[in-house]
Amino acid sequence: MVVRRQLSRHINTLAFQCVFRMGGSSFNRLWPSVTPDKTTAIHVADNRGASPFLAITMRTYRNFIDGRFVEPQSDSFSDVDNPATSGIIARVALASQDDALSAVEAASRAQKKWRALSAIERGEHLRRFADAIVERAPQIGAALALESGKSVADSENEARYAADITRYHAEWARRIEGEVIPSDTPNENLVLHREPIGVVACLIPFNYPVYTLLRKIAPALITGNTVVVRPSNNTPASAFEIAEAALQAGLPAGIFNVLAMDHATAGTVCTHPAVGMITLTGSVNAGRIVLDYCKTNIAKPSLELGGKAPAIIEPDADLEAAASAIVASKTTHCGQLCTAMERVYVHASVHDRFVELLRAKMHAVSFGDRSQDASKMGPLVSRSAQRNIHAMVERAVAEGATIATGGVLPEGPGYFYPATLLVNCRHDMEIVREEIFGPVLPVISYDTLDDALAMANDHQYGLSSVLYTENYRTAMRVANEIEAGELYVNRTPADPYQGFHAGWKRSGLGGDDGKHGMLEFTQTRLVVMKY
Image (tube, rainbow, N blue to C red; front, side):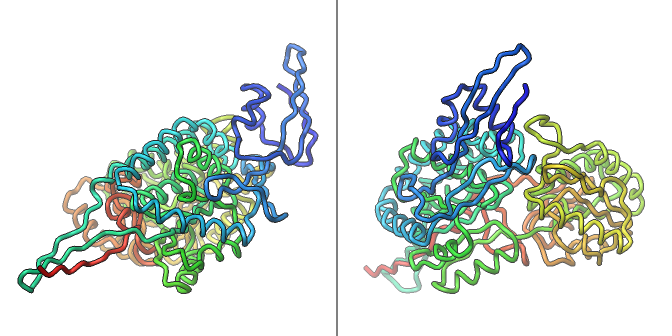
């Protein structure tokens, strides 16, 4: 199929394929939360000589406030790039200050009625919401694939996994429990209630925007809070598709609001007196900004910030399994995971053998547009991320590291970077000390487990960690001594949603998932009853 586009910057091929295969009217069914912006003529000719003519419309996503998509109140817009092609695939209307105030006020009004519902009623709303997300997984997945560079299959699976975590939190409806505490005074009871906080501002990252959005709003909603969501401006389209699912599910107006915002407008939301909690997944610098916001009204912070996950490879480890898992961790979504392996400590006795396994497996990873070939590693989020990562590799080489594979900055469209293995690294190098957030893996040799633990713990971050060993005593020792919120033994991180994903040190405050993550969205009231 040959496509001739009359655009200065092209519409992504995948967007076109979705429309062409589904029929000309299907664009509106695929992206119903958008309004026309400008029409682009696209001429299509297949190899049989047919030449149907389709008019495909570039779209502008609208903000979702108080149960409806609202017309923009400002002339500010943000382009959404496809990182695999560098082409603009959509744009979003940036919320005005008035939009931000309207969203918080709508959430505050709705929260009074929402918290008054029984938890089981709130759970039923969440189940219908999850069903709608699954039903709309093709639309959500198509939008996510375009804006993130993921494959369509991975994007749809992310939507379904988001529905799963929504159902999981719906199941907590009958288990949000308080406590009865013995009193020192006769004829007296102490009853501890769990209550919602109020309005929660949810700041969503670019890397897993669909899953993380539901990971945050599902526990907030089941506990009786309402939310105002700011998606990443790199990946906002999928958030508005989730808003469509909320409409389809009949979620009460005002309990779930989604706005694309610049930093100033996000600050307006986060410092509003009605906002009692701010939850963020993002960088350490973003976390500092949120803490400044929280100071205004003494709002509660919940922060998942940077990570620099260490992997310790003991001499008795299954080296083949360890190498395969670590390479998969480092190349999934181009290494843009907070829990991806960021540094590998390998026992000196198996160092060379393990490095060769890593080198061969990373060398075999090719990159490219996953809408064309889902077996390839996709792009980084932006051109600046690509350049920053390459600059880190160049500085590592200048400090003495050796590139075993990769390390060449690609030319052409898209924000790709090859799977890169760095050896002869030292623990004091920047590449070992700072988060990479890309497909670059530094390897350091160690002589004793004491050395490995000392280096793993000598760090500003403490989110996830990994150990490969067949020795139970070694596993128990590391489990007791590692300075991280998570340890995965003989596997790489997976963030089970019934667990508790929390960081130590500069990796964050609070946490997500499971009972403990859900309780983050509550506050307590002690009732002392004399009788």
